[in-house]
Length: 264
Image 1 (cartoon, rainbow, N blue to C red):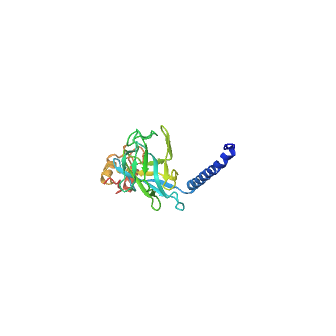
Image 2 (spheres, rainbow, N blue to C red; image 1 turned 90 degrees about the vertical axis):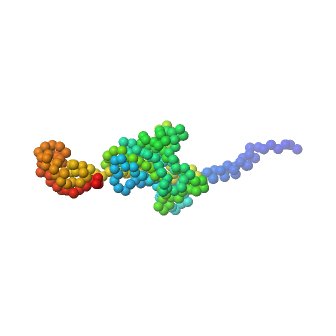
Image 3 (cartoon, rainbow, N blue to C red; image 1 turned 60 degrees about the vertical axis):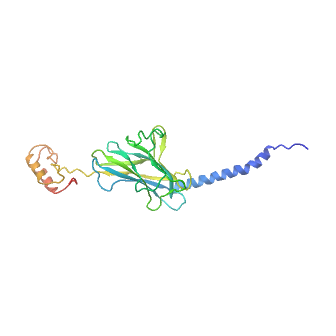
């Protein structure tokens, strides 16, 4: 009896079902992932104080994650978030973060420079105007983002100087040493990025009141005294910039009588 040796047909007949199954599984995964990325997303929004901020004040900026749609089994929860923050370091300084009032997470942190392969974090709490933040849910417990969404973390910033408004934003990507992206990894499909809109926080300071010439926070008798003592001369009391204090400046002062800057 001759010894039987497997030929190429034998090998193909045994391998084809396995290869076909693998191809089918890959196609299904790609289809599901593509459909999810196209229609379902988790938006990341930074929310700052509702009112005006002041120089020297420490303000809270909350990071919230909220589902844009809820018809699918994806895009309703997250397992992890990579978030790239961006701000003007001349306007505000990042002080750190707090998890008080936020959803329970396994990890919520700025990776230190010695483990941040992207090079974004030059310090443990970055100061140069951009920062990489990581959030990781507890294993087996993805964070739900439907309804009102989830408060992920609160960043703390100090207002450094006067400005009309300044933004604290989330960058979609940034390359320092290596390219990095903001991503929201779905809590159901491993590795699926369902990041949607990236919404900034805008900090505003109360507009200056030029008519408050004596700086006491209210337009009143003290400012009237400044106008009268400067009559016919240039200076801060020349409110309309005509080159000399006159009746038009007096009229402007009187029209703002009693207005306040909020300093009181």
